[in-house]
Image (cartoon, rainbow, N blue to C red):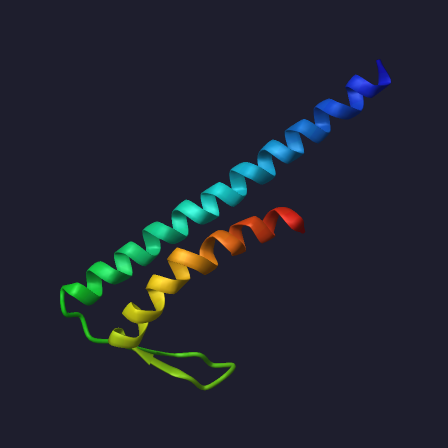
Length: 83
């Protein structure tokens, strides 16, 4: 019976971690979709990364978002499970 007592909390933790990773993935895709809609609507903006000093305007961000969502987002969500 001790093994069953160990497995259930592990199952619950893994399930919660999977749910959190999926929420991150889905929420981030939605956030990028909102950003793309704002860009398509013609909203002008620029963002500065305070660490690197890099400036990104709406055109650059639209371009970057494709790779972020298509490639890096899935990798980042998967990486959350490895922590």
